[in-house]
Length: 350
Ligand SMILES: Cc1cc2nc3c(=O)[nH]c(=O)nc-3n(C[C@H](O)[C@H](O)[C@H](O)COP(=O)(O)OP(=O)(O)OC[C@H]3O[C@@H](n4cnc5c(N)ncnc54)[C@H](O)[C@@H]3O)c2cc1C
Image 1: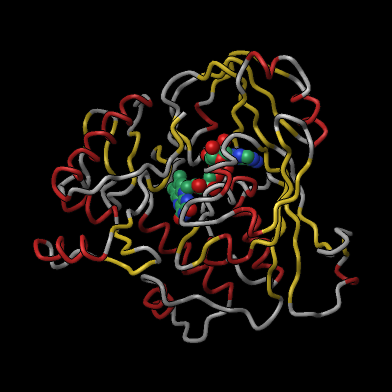
Image 2 (image 1 turned 90 degrees about the vertical axis):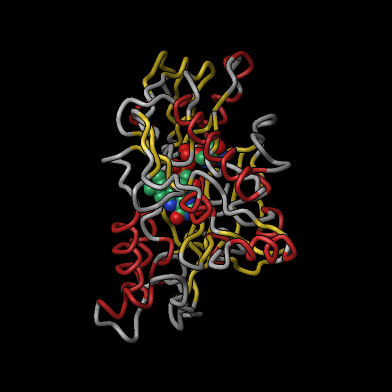
C-alpha cells in the first residue's frame, strides 16, 4: 500500500469539486487498513474514508489523509458459520446470504443480483457509490431501503483496529440514517456487508411513485425483478442528472418530518403540499418545498438547482464547495422563511 501526497480528488467526488488531499491511500485488503491505522500518520493527519464520493461535498482541500476503499469480492455464505458456499452447496431454502466487500460498486452488485435471480435490491438500481457506504445512510429509493435486505456487516474499529460484527439492530437504521451517522460517527470503517436475498417468491415493490406507469409503458403487467430494475433505470435516467455529465451528489437535503398539526396548518396555505404519514409525523417532499419557493432550475455562475429535480444541487463547471454551500444556505433560509421548516443536509460536508 502506497501513501501518496497532494492527490487531486476531482475525479473521486461526483460533484467534481477540484480539491486535493494532503495524503492519500488506497485500501485493497482488510490487512492494508489495519496496517495503515497502526501508523503514526493517522494520529497527525485525520483520516477520511472515501467510497464513490457520491454523498460528499468537499468545502475545501482536505488536510488529512483520504483513505479510498477499493476492496472487491462477492460471495455466497452460510450466515451461521460464515463459510463461503459454491452454487452447488446451497440447498434451495428460497433465500441466499451474500457477503460483499465494501469497495464493490453498488450498482454492479445490484446488476449481479438481478442476473443471478436474487431478489430484494432491484428497486435500488443505479444508485451511485459503493457497497460499504450503503449502510451509512441506509440508502433508499422507490419504496425500498437497504435495511430491508440487510443481514450484518463487519467493520474495523479505528481506535483499536479490531473487527466488529454489527447485526441489523445494532445498526439502528432509520430514514437516511444509521448508528454510523450518530453515536458511531467516524469510529468505524465498514469492511463488508452481508445481504439476505430471495431466490424465489420475490416480494416485489411496485406501488411507489411512477413505477407502475413505467412498467405499463414497457408493456409489462406481471413484472419480475429484472423488469423492475429496467423500469427504475429508465425513470432515474429521465429525472436525475448523470454525475459524469453534470456534477451533483443526488438529493442535497433530506425530506423533513413535521408534526401532523404543523402539516394541517401548512395545508391551509398550500393545499397541494404532499405529505406521507411516517412514525413521528408527516414526511414532506423537500424537492416540492424548494420548487414552490422558486429555486428549480435556478443558476448562478457555476452552481445551480437541477431543472428536473429541485432537490439536486449541481456544479455546472468550476464551482467550488463554498459556492455550493452558499447556494444551499440561501435555499434553506428561504424555505425557513416561507414555510418555517428547517432543511437538514443529506450530503456529508467535509
Ligand atoms: C445522481 C445521484 C443519485 C443518488 N440517488 C440516491 C438515492 O436514490 N438514494 C440514496 O439513498 N442515495 C442516493 N444518492 C447518494 C449516494 O449515492 C449514496 O449515499 C451512496 O451510498 C454513497 O456512496 P459512496 O460510496 O459514494 O459514499 P461516499 O460519498 O464516498 O461517502 C459517504 C459517507 O460514507 C462514509 N464512508 C464511505 N465508505 C465507508 C466505509 N467503507 N466505511 C465507513 N464509512 C464510509 C464517508 O466517509 C462519508 O461520510 C445519489 C447520489 C447521486 C450522485
